[in-house]
Image (cartoon, rainbow, N blue to C red; front, side, top):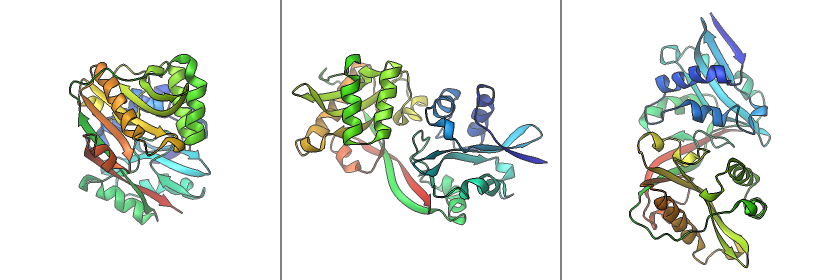
Length: 295
């Protein structure tokens, strides 16, 4: 007999959630306990979660990871055991979420994916979302580059620059990016944030990640399992009044220089709609995603 209940992942449940993910999802997206913890009960947004699980005989047979964000519910991930699909369990998971107003799939403040990955192995999931009234929204992609020898030219953030950098990111871009930047300073990852200054003030920034980073970034969620010397970048931004001067390319190249100095070879930039910009720097398209939204 099935039992559905609202439940936040806890230290005790993370092992089971990880095992379910790796048994049910394509092997291109391997999960570990570190990532689930970081994006659920360790994440600042988790107090507004909308998650639930369905259990049969003490075993998880379906789960939904979601949270309330910006007056909408964002589904970060959901899964149903292969032998329980087409038995209405997915619909049961969505039942309460769809009553709460606008819903989107992917791309929230602690996203596993920017949207639904594109590929035949995700066709069933795409059909499921459409059946429940979800409509295609934005498109995004991850791009990949292999680094060779690079010059040691970069400028990392210092601890005392926290307020200036976080303030610039929040003023010019988004509160979400500002919170992510503040979290990296708090964790001690400030050196992984590269900046360009003018007159003593930051005018461009780029986050970077590598195996020594304390926090995982979306750009390294998946390929860190494939490469020993992995790295990632993003988000990236330039103050509006300084755009058009080539500073976007310059700050990305500084981030790649920094990662190369840390021994990184394989690097990803995640969730971008400006692939052509990164291709000019040497990146190649790697994975694509389709966002979905239910009005």
